[in-house]
Length: 189
Image 1 (cartoon, rainbow, N blue to C red):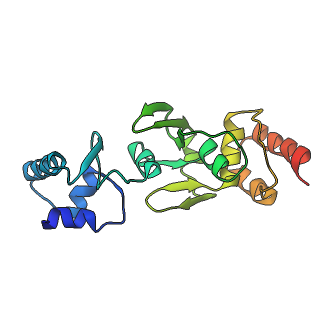
Image 2: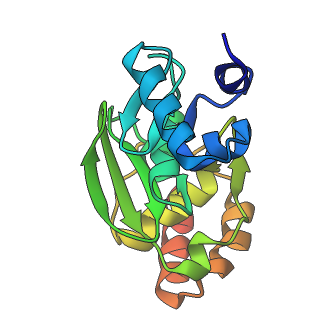
Image 3: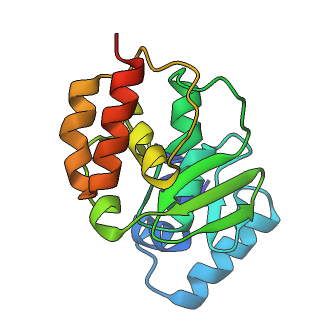
């Protein structure tokens, strides 16, 4: 295995943009860089999962890919709410907070929902995972009721309401604050 490939395989990342590979491998010649990427994809040492995005093999983190396609972004909405037990419906789709709204198919569905930059770029309630960012359950809950006024949640017992009332300030939205108060009155025990 040559040094180019070794640097990629030694990385903890599972998904790489071509820019990340260029930085990681320190390849300065653009033609050599493109040739190497093409060669390694052809001989299956790397897998191209989308134009400009590569993985080491089939076992890559789909959330990592989803948050790299459109940046800045983070995993939120139904994906986090389901994982945290606030909703019980199963979604194979990965739901992402982003600067734009899009639906794409890439080894599964990815749905990007647009949030204002002030909200999207605020790191409160966002945690760094291995290779991507994800909302806490409180932040995902607020993202959801910010976009959907009457969303039904199956189980709000795990919500830290104090954290929600702290986080709601980043949205700068009185209607959202009122929605949060209504959910609190209805579900807090």
